[in-house]
Structure formats: C-alpha cells, structure tokens
Length: 596
Image (tube, rainbow, N blue to C red; front, top):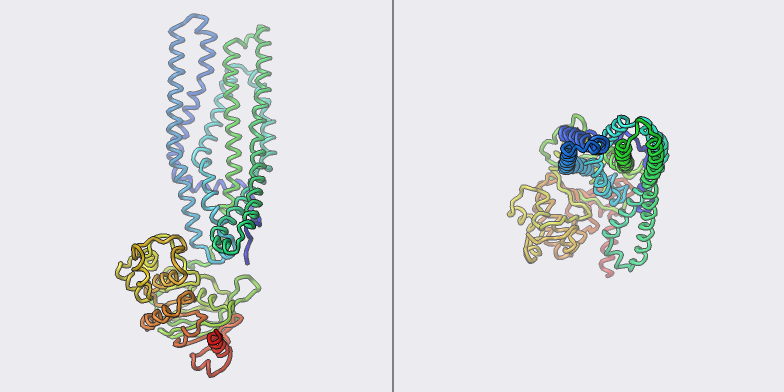
C-alpha cells in the first residue's frame, strides 16, 4: 500500500512550469497596495540613485574645469541627498516587504495545514509522514525570500537596468552598443542553465524529503531501535541518506553559481574593451569622448552589471522556488475524497439505529477487504466484532465513522445514508477510541477535554472516574494539570488508554466505538472499568472490538468477521451453542489461560 519509503525518491507526474507562479498570485493579491507602493518607491529610488555617475561627468567636464566651487558644492549636496533617499527607501522596503512576505508564507502554510487535516486516511496510509512534514515547514520556508523581496527586486532591477541603459545612450551611443553586444551570450547561458538547475533542485528536494522521512521515523521508533541495539545500522542508513543529500546539494550549488562567474567574466571583458576603446578614442580626439564621459560611462558600466547579476540571482530563486511550489501545490492538489457532498445535510440527532447494506470496500483497487457486509443494529444495542487479525473489524468501524468512502452499498444511521450528511454533524455525535491511543503534548485535563472543548473541570473529572482513570491521575504531581509529552511518553500504555477512553466518553456520543479499548489495561482495572461502562452503555449504541472475549460476553450482538465477511452473528450463548468459529476462538482462549 505504501506509495514510497524513506529511501525512494518521489516521482511527480506534473512538470514544473510558470503556472505555479500564477497560482501564487492569489496569495499576493491581498497585499497589492503595499507591493505597488513599495515598488513605486523603489523605482523612484533607483532613478535617484542613477544620478551619481552623471553628476561626476558634469563635475569633471564642466564644474571643475570652470573652477565653479559653488556648482561643485551643489552637485555634492544633490549626490548626498540621493544616497539618503535611496537608503531610506531601501529600509522601508525591507521592513514592509518582510511583513508582507511572512504574511504570505503564513497564509500558504495555513492552507496547507487546513488541507492536510481534511485529507482522507488513505493519504497518510501511503506516505512517510516525514515527507509530508517537510512540505509544510522546509519548502514553505524556502519561499520566504522570493515572496518577500524577490519579485519587487526583479521589477526594480529591470527598471534600474533600463534607466542605466538610457543614461549610457545619452552619454555615448558607440560605447553603449559595445556593452549591449554581450547580452545575447548571457541570455543563451541562462536558458541552458535553467534546465540543469530545475533537475538538480528536484533531485535535492527528493533527497531532503527522504532524509526528513527517515529522521521522523527514527525518532518515533527510537525505543525499538535501542531495544534491538540497531543504533549502528540506523547510523549507516542515516549517513547514506545524508551523503546523498550533500551530493545533491553540491551539484545544485555548482550549477547555481555558473551564472555569476559567467556574468563577472563577461563584464570584465567588456570593461577592458571600453577602457581600451575609450582611451584610444580620447587620445584620438573623438568629439563624443571626454574624461568625464569615460569616467561616467565606466560608473554606469559597473552599475550595469549589478542588476544583471541580481536578475540572474532572482531568476535562480524563481527556478528554485518553482521546485518547492511543485511539491507544495502537489499536496494542495491532492483530492479530498472523503468530504461533504455539494448538497450535504446536517445529520439529525442520532437515536442509534445502524445498518450496513451490501457494503463492499477495498483500500487498493482489486484487493477487496470487505465483501457484501449486511447487518442491522437497533438503538442502544452493543455490538462486538471479533475474529482473526486483518479480518476487517477495524475497517467496519472506520466506514461507520466515514474515514473512508465505501466502494458499493450503503451505511445508514437512523435510515439516513451517512454519505449524504456533513462530516462534522456526523462525527460530532460519535465517540471513537482507536487502537492508537494518541496523547497530545499538554496537561491531562486538556487531553481529556479534547473530546469536548467546552466541558467543565467537573465533567472531565467525572469522565475520568467512570473509566477508572481518576485514581492514577490524582496521584500525579499536579493531578489533572500534570504536563505530559507528545504521545504520552510519561504514561504507561494502560494509562494512555484510560485517558483516551475518558476523552471519548466525555463527548457523550450517541454512538460509541471502542477499538481494542482495554488491550493495555490490567485485569483488575478492566474489571472496575467494565462496571462503569455497563452503566454508561445503557441506551447508547456501541461497537466494540476486543480480543479478550471475556469483555464482550454481555454484548447484544456478536459478529465473527473473517476474510472480510460476517461468518457468524448472534449472542454469546447462541454462538457457543453453534460451536463454530466463535466457539473455537472462545474455548481456545480459555485453554490458553489455563495452560499458563
């Protein structure tokens, strides 16, 4: 089922193209006023900043030869003011656009996180979670500079380049044409490097994704790693992945820095040509070349290559950004298959009648998990699902909670097809405790209240008492306000299950689903827990999956599931009299207990 592992590069079907930048526009539009104002200001500052070489020309050719001290002083003041204005504009741009850029990043990450919460379980079943995490954090962060200042810098540098060329033409046409003769070479190199750069950054992103996935997996499984003394083996795997990332990074950097040296080499060659020709024409008495013209032109020459180099770097950033956008939008484009229909209705208050009508389901096409499941449960009845591992028990309750879409058939609650109601109105009336008792970082009080955010402290404590969690909670250093780490590492497996149990019960659901709810609880606690549950389950439809058959003997209906089908169903007494699969499972379990 897994789409790929930590050591498998992702293969995206879509190609990187300019359309990704168009999709970014929707994030930029809300800030168009700030961007336009900043762009206009930077264009004005760029124009002001270009006065320097021209003022030098006037000083060398006119003011100094005429010994005009006042004029020289005026030129100096104008130059000084131009630098002050340019510095102030640059400071404004940095402050304003960093705020705008971070707001854009915030909105993009919000959309990603919101979309990830809506994606079906199948999305998470088929990917290493580290490869998902890297898209929300690393890839979005990598777009920060491009979205905050990159685009404005691109416009400013292009405008600056046009202004410089205009000044150069105004000073000397022949020298300007010589300078511009190098442009076709730069453009050709940029297009050649673009393809190489895109491929190299794709490869780098794959290696980063693989490395992140393995680190995430290793942290989650560190206890198993230490228990089996696999530290050295895991380190070898890590070094291999890390080495692959380093190799990909070095290739990216080599390609990325091909442009700047090429620009520098071309600029040096052109400057040398200008020096030689300028001095030759100056000595030859050319009418259009003077000391001031040559110095001013060389000043503009030095500035001419700066925006070209900046445009090349921004171009690099755009190419790199496209490779990140490819992964981000690939995630945003992932279809939310389990979602509200266009005309979905609110689920009425649930009484508890549950029906499965000819339900068929498969996680992967062609590999059917459930085959023609049919059953009906009256309100208030408790239903137990038993059978061998992998038979389809958890799949049935996942379909009841509508975590997956069924292939064929219907799932009805009180006669309403659950595919026609909103997910929120359905799940808000159901309490689900899955096999993985996930505990969030925070206090025990907050973890239990997760099932009902408006619950009072008294309601939380009462739920904990019902499931027999109160005794161990009150003995902790801060009681219900004791802080627990992610996944509840400070708690035993049984304690985590009791907290998860209290969380599910606090929601006061009309339908309660318990998937191996007592698997990690000791026998004495289980006996006490059963006493509290019998009262709680009265008048409430419940589905219970348990391998300890002693915990489900009192269920109104027991269904034995095997190979995706209901093989037997009835009460405990009826199934024992039948002496079929359930009878064999029940008696073999007791024989095993007697043997030990």
